[in-house]
Length: 362
Image (cartoon, rainbow, N blue to C red; front, side, top):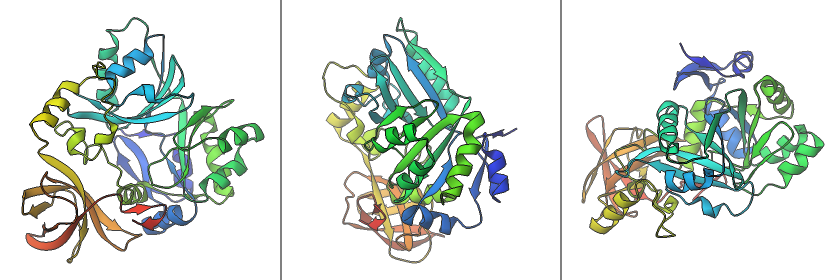
């Protein structure tokens, strides 16, 4: 049976069309996915992301644990509150999941992982923690999480926070977070727009949602969240990232913390070997020039060989079909290709991503 977030009654009250997503009952839209997409690009929208798994990591060895566990280097977190995006890898280099880590201090961190990978992530983390004397992983399941996104998201969120919390939130730089009296507020998101992700006690989730609603923030569902992240060129685990592909093949090579050279993170040897022998594939953007809609699983035909679309769909901002695709390494942005749509090749162009930045075509 599917789980329900603390905000489930609010979705029903707003007329949300609820579907099962990764074992959770969540709204795919509240009437119009297209309107919700434009709401975030032009104003402010909010998403229930309570289904994502939140952890508090503590202990004197927590820093060393993370230096071993994830590919990016947490030593980049030079200030309290700073956040880091990183893949967590298998020894063979495949991606177990992609996560966000916030440093609170030298022995306390907040970690956010994907809902669909929750169980395997937790099993992997607890297994790796055995080698460290003082590492504690605590689930924060008694919370709700709301992502408020869009060019007006910060202004409208600050209106509903207490004076003390508003001062803290207003002072956050992008990719920073802070603990307040009873909230955790991160200036992060998954849309390519500015905004906050707010973690509140489960009992206060609907009250926060209603305050944001009264401030003019519109509810948005999973459908708009997916088209927004696709336009922003952000990977979706299970599509653009998985255990069969390395970060070097997935457009997130920038997340690999190669320095210092003696940091032996899980998967390092496999990635170094792949760099040495040659990376076989790359993740690129596609713009459809022909008719139809680009979809996951469609074959991409290039002069360097065939590839596969990992994420695809219609871009409301660009008013055309776009995709992310994993193609042979020698297929580079600027080249032409074809995509098999209903067994017929349709012309497309290979491009860099993101497709949209700050609401505008790149």
